[in-house]
Amino acid sequence: MSSFDISIQARASGDFHEATILEGLAPMDLLVVEREWSPERSNLMQELLAAGVDRRKWPQSLHWDWSKKAPALRLLESSGFGLVCEKKWQGVMMTRTASYSARLKADRGKPIVYLDFLEVAPWNWVIQDIHRSGLFRTIGLQLFWRAVQQSLDEGFKGRVGLHSLPRAEDFYRKCGMVEVGHDAAKQDLVYFELTQEGAEKFLADGGYK
Amino acid sequence: MAAKKTMTLNLTDAEMLALDELSEKKDLSKTAVIRQALRLYQMVNIRIERGDKLFFEDEAKKEKAEVVVL
Image (cartoon, rainbow over all chains, first blue to last red; front, top):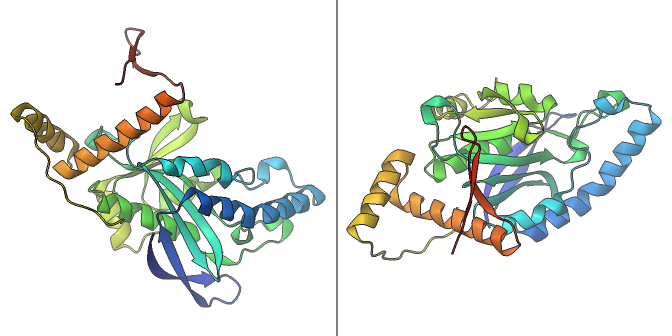
């Protein structure tokens, strides 16, 4: 497993904390992630129910279960990344490097890093309806940055593709991804792609605007 | 990235030509093409071993053909 040292910012204090992005997670790591996050998911669900929040406004990954995604890490094409701070998994990401290729005309058919799943820890979610402000910010951005780096490492020129959950679409637009369109084969989610030029701009701009 | 080991690969002219063409078309180094091929072969094998089937589909012609992988 390899690692990169970074820093992440606490939302409340604005202080920066030392953190690490780990690459090469094993299936067992995802079981640990789920064991760590699952009680927090349950707490949130209970709070949302108690507050009578409309289910359409619930976090869209609340039902995810990383232990069910773990077996995919046995494939050569799958990679797992985790962001750790204060001895806790603050965010996790899984990518694939062989089953998807670029759809945009300029690069059609060329390999991409496909971002299969990215989720930040439930205690980092901002949920205004139940007054949750989240502990750390930019976890998702740091993991997305790592996916772009992986694409460069693989020789894919920074190309990244993904299907976005509806409430994450704006985030990926701000990362410079191009909206390709709804994909009927993937629960009608919007498919986004980061081009080589988009990746260069993303990395040069510090990532997000 | 994970540590890598080096190996020598012996290819026929035809195989080398195919590798060159794929490398050009996919905008990848030859090593990256081989690596991609291995990832795909492993994935397909795992799916087939668990009972899945692999098909090529031509949507326009409404044709579907099973691919037999050895």
